[in-house]
Amino acid sequence: MRALVTALGLAVSAAGAQPLRFADLDGWEADDHAAALAVFRETCDLMTAPDWAPLCRLAAEVTDARAFFEMFFQPVLTGAPPALFTGYYEPELQGSTVRTPRFAWPVYARPPEFDGKGIWHSREDIERRGLLRGRGLELAWLEDPVEVFFLQVQGSGRIRLQDGRVIRLGFAAKNNHPYRSIGAELVRRGAMDQHAVSAQGIKAWVRRNPAEGARLLRHNPSFVFFRKLADLSPEHGPIGAMGRSVTAMRSLAVDPEFVPLGAPVWLEKDGSAPLRRLMVAQDTGTAIKGAQRADIFYGSGAAAGDAAGRVKDSGRMIVLLPLDIALAKAGE
Image 1 (cartoon, rainbow, N blue to C red):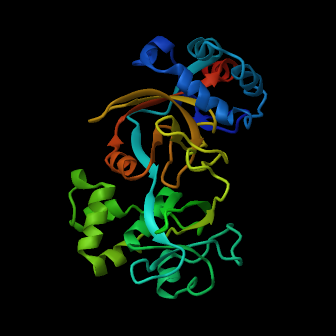
Image 2 (cartoon, rainbow, N blue to C red):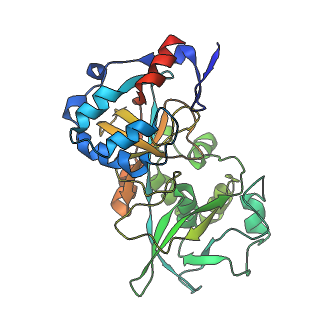
């Protein structure tokens, strides 16, 4: 199967790119296209490729959002549904800037000897050998090791201090070991049924089994380092892969090998809480691989975490591409 490499650097099979009509998009007419356009504008200036730059200039001026998308874009289905949709969020956790009997689990900055390139020590090496301990790299202290682990999974968070102040933490680097699913490991061990796997279920299992839970968390060798985001206002979401804040229920983490960052993406998520919405691909994720794979940003705080942790749904996602790119795909 011959690979089609576009000017955007997307590598997809020619047979996997199917142009659609807007009439083929389930629920398209009912969406809030103006809300989607506002999020699209947030990162559009970063898309400097020749097919995107003119559209981004036009996006700043248009008043009819639906007409803008329908006139200048072509829906393209890439890959083979069903898609796999999951959710992510920005945790808000209780914490401290100093270690206390309650807050005894550190969140670390990137060590100076590691530039973020190549493979560094695994999670087990870091924790068992204390490679970061006592070096002044602690950005905050949390009260629960499983919350530290899931903060790394999410890649950003808000730490609420005891005096009411809030520290915003963002992704700084990772050790570049492969991500291994803790939920899948619990299923493999027979400790949890597949249908019961969720972030909430995993947290509860680890807390009920602290010694075995610590070993379980080390099954994932991937480790994330953070940085303080002192200039990020509370009303803005965490920083995504494009270097700008992401927006709850409009921003999507994708695989940039198949979906260009900044592109509009029509999402048809099934499951217990169906979703038909125009999103914008503004983030990436270690576990987000493939043309029909995406992570939906649900927002910040506990309620967003509850909602995001329950999402593991099928459906399909359709990328909206500039007409010239879409026609080139169809021609190939």
